[in-house]
Length: 552
Image 1 (cartoon, helix red, strand yellow):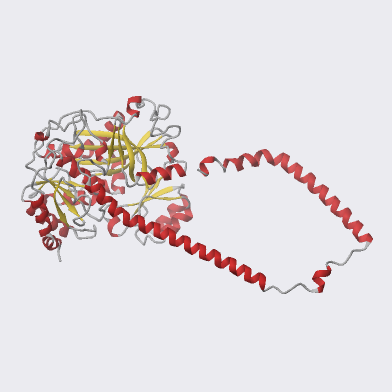
Image 2 (tube, one colour):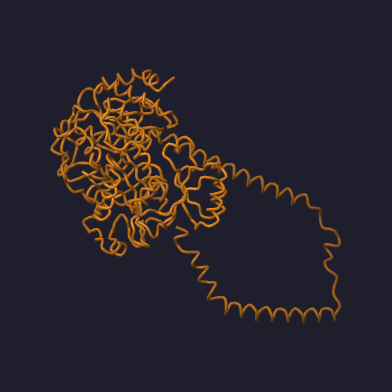
């Protein structure tokens, strides 16, 4: 069955949902705080042009898709979404006009996915803005823009550019070509090349999947993976096959690094119409996963570098860039260039109330995008992962993204910022507003749907932990019982055991006592000398390995 026929089979649910949601939102006013009203009010956006949240792959708990639905829906734009089922958080949002139930894996043929999108576009019946939320969707929309443009509004980007940017190797080559700093990287394509690299590499290093589409079809690693030794690398590589699709990247120690985020939207001439910078405070998994908590911080130097790179490569559309400031050499190094809306894009907003998704809708519908600076001091918390991240950072003694600063209360980085860059001001340290990824007073149901879906995996995890503990307890009881039975089976002591050793003669006792006294004296002198000489060298090393951080 093709994607189009599958979509048609689920069509009645979409039609019913669309009928139910034809009425405007219940609230007549825009649910925004004073001083941050939508740009020019809801009349500025073209509400005759709907939007479609395009996703490929199964990840129903995606706060970025919900945020895109809300940010356009609050302007009165009809928003549709591709969902795994009709009860995902995105599908139950009051701002979602209709959901297209179309579970995909990312392993389908591109032609099949294009047919499915064409069928969705025909059902909506109007030319629709396509908002990709993953790399696969961004690549598909760019490479098949010619047929899809009949139903969708798409950025005017070179067809092959998003795929190259989403590829770790392609991005590294672009960085080298345009003089953009990036971590040193290797791309071994055979087991022999990998073994040769392992013999001369510096550890630890980081392993990542090389291509966007391959990570769905044949992932090499589950995500960003740190490898501490040559043995760990070779052991992991045993499962990578004869053509490992992997990047092995230089590891920048977190105590010498800051993780920065840049979100932007570029028009057809590759000019950044809106651009934002912020710093990542926590991620999940720790230091290697999605953003769990972040804050906006103005960084003109980094913003200028990102804008120059986008202009040089001719990029158009929404992008989410991850940079790591290497405090050892003062360089911002580009880690990832995601040519789609980032999950945390609602962290950022201009003083005119624009984010990157709103800016794209205005630009591609032919409306002006008001120039306005970003609002600093905003903070984003992702409720379903940040509590775990906060606990993990504290337990490991890693609650700080940079040494000597508390990310929650003190973001004064003057001692850490490279020469020539202004440190964030105290006004930027205080969170003027905290944006929650899931909880919204005007749209509470997605948060409840997230909790319901999260309950299953959480209960399953607790059940596995409980079963593991029960198995260990049973094993301990069995071991104790075996020891008791072994003691009970020992034979009783015989007469020879009760009599003890035979008494020694007087001469023998005197000689043994003299030898023992001599040995004891020598041992005492030797121990004193070793303590006096080795003590100052050994004890600090021992104490250094028992810092409080190792136990907290």
